[in-house]
Image 1 (cartoon, rainbow, N blue to C red):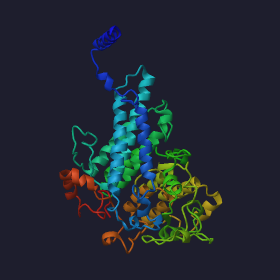
Image 2 (image 1 turned 90 degrees about the vertical axis):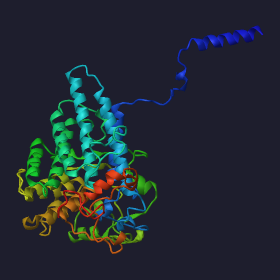
Image 3 (image 1 turned 180 degrees about the vertical axis):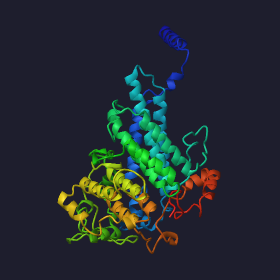
Image 4 (image 1 turned 45 degrees about the vertical axis):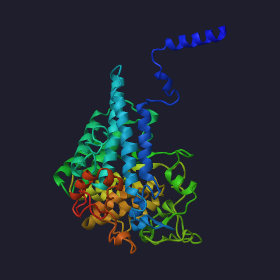
Length: 482
């Protein structure tokens, strides 16, 4: 009995010495805080994964630009984006997984106190790079949907149902942000280091990326506001855009899942045989004897020819050319901007009469050369290709020259190729006969996500009402005028 009394007394004494027992509910194994670097890295990977993905649940832009055709299930080639909620997934990943992480990273960076000028410069670089990534992501959303949540986005407490902002206004604000970010970046100071999966913290590279993105946005706007666009194009070029393939915004993947190239994960590791090269693309490259064919895809099984499957229909996997295994390697890089695109944008700018230095023909040739060099094409083959009359730049029909060659040069970058196609209206791409809901043309935007139409109905309805023709796959974003 005495022992029991002593034990009870000990327990009572122990408890009485603790004023607050709520700590007993604390999770000591899982962190409640993180570092801004971790959030930034996660956002980068999430963004690049989404932009280069090959899953038809997430990314169908290679199908829109008719690089690939499907085998068993041609739904997405026929523009059925309803059975699988593809717009919802694209919207959700970019807002929830990318922009939200970038915002939280910026919030944590804002709380940091620096000890001196060097630390302050590094912190300023980090904040600018986070904002550049955010600006890029918002531009993707605008180029996909048109008007989207912007000023009220990412604030679930203040604006649980955010309004949709005018797309052109968003564009101009993004350009202003990019301009300020470049001005605040110090090329002589570091930033995220190895936490930056694209440029390893190289601020000078981020300046070129931001200026090149500014160039793209300004070129997109030229048909709707030529004076403003021309000023921004010139300013971006003067500030310094990409000048070689070493400036490409590449995220190099690792050799094993979950950090392998998404194409490897979606196609090789999954054992799926969902895609062959589309006849639209293969036929064009065949007509030019393009040396990149061997880099882009294989010969058809049992033949020595490059043969594409019929776009928009079911195709036998064994009868047509396949995606080149180089692209499907687990370590193949995901690219969100490159020198090839930059030079095509400069060629287009010059063709539009904007002073960017050099001629449209020179930039056009440089763009094709940059593409071929990035894929390892021999110098002699590059020269032979460029000498073809059907390849030589045609100033009288510059949209066709640039549009068709940009289409070829941007292979595997479906989203960027889709932007170029909508802006230039080349190459000429036809909707398949069996298109969903009897669509007569290639989609020029995504419809607003079904979930948004349900949860945020008032704001989505208001945004839809402002679209000429309504919220459809065939209506256009503000800069797509023709």
